[in-house]
Image (cartoon, rainbow, N blue to C red; front, side, top):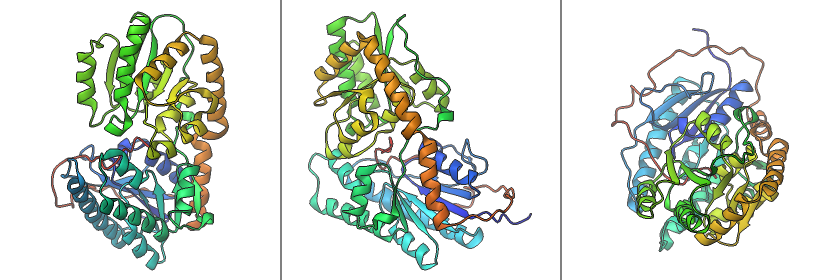
Length: 429
């Protein structure tokens, strides 16, 4: 077959299988549209998947992830295994399929040796900063180990300093990349998370008939504090009864079994429903049916400096938000949200109760949210910033795309069985 002369970018993501990482899918689509060829190296999710769903021809090179658990040793095992598997895949691609540049998405922050290798070969390496690993460790650990915290901070710094360029998901992350990370400000670009306008097939429409729907969308791990949403539902049922509202919790994570049991113990099975992990079309349909979106994240350094993907998903459909008053949440939603001082269930319940009874307020918030999304937050704006980085690092010549030879992406890899991983929050910072 004719050689595909498009510049070839390898994207490394090990926190989720690539087909479940909406940011990586959007980045791959943006690169394809600009004339690049993309291969994603990631943990194996759907067995036998060789191309990234929703893209034209982005290839997947997947590896099994047999390590799963909790605690420092478990995460260290995941980090080491992921680094080994990614290194093997990247070296193979460098030898057999001409990789022109690479991008690593964190967590974990362990791929800086590959950044050094790529740069020694004269090839750019981009660090896509999804999560604050030191702050994430603090948020997930009751008594953080000082040595572990120091290692995470040093690895984060090395990841930024060894990279050719850093992509930050918001202004707070950019400040960290420049300050704590020591990267040149001219080589740090903000590329936010969020859906493209084309992904929004239905905006949330105000409706006063039937039950009003409160929606939570995202990862359900301890640090996401979805427990507060369930407890707020219990308090809301005491305040206004159960006839005119319901809560739908969509997503997956370590805390899901516990929260299902909690809802049953509190007698909430008639008003609190768990939808599980949803695909793109299902997310769109759920949020279009919503009345209010809830963001119960705790007010800690990690949440305060992070942009939650769920917030942008709510705002994109004009869905009013009830959230804790966090720096980056306020920067994202501005007047499209009602803010609580803390994450107490009672505060959420009071805010939800008032907003459910305020259709005019919800209509104003809807208009603010839609305007913010279309003028600033939509992926089209982020894709332009993303591609500006790549066009500077790896200019694209006007060459035709050539279909690649299909091959079994996983067959050569000699380890293990199908697994998934969960290195961080990755709800999407």
